[in-house]
Length: 102
Image 1 (tube, rainbow, N blue to C red):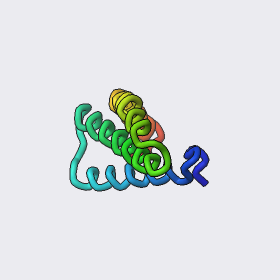
Image 2: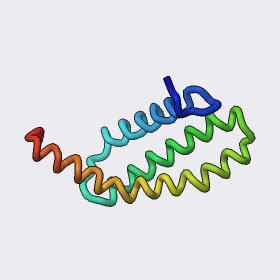
Image 3: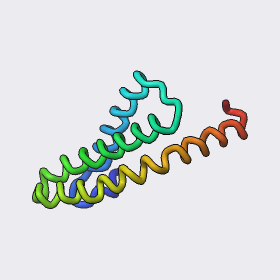
């Protein structure tokens, strides 16, 4: 059940599947070491998420309003994701070392 979609059932589920497929294809072809590649991939994944949501929502709502929202908030979300991604990956790596999973 996609409870966060609002008026368009399945919008977030579609967007997350699109992002997962994008990241899966990129991760198979690119070995990410360092901060800049992680930030770039995180930014692109968040931007793909925003574009997928906008694509689904523009089928129901006025496309001009939807795309204005994507440009305004999608870029902010993608930028925030890119800035926080290195810290999140570092925390996950630390947790794996502490728990002996790596």
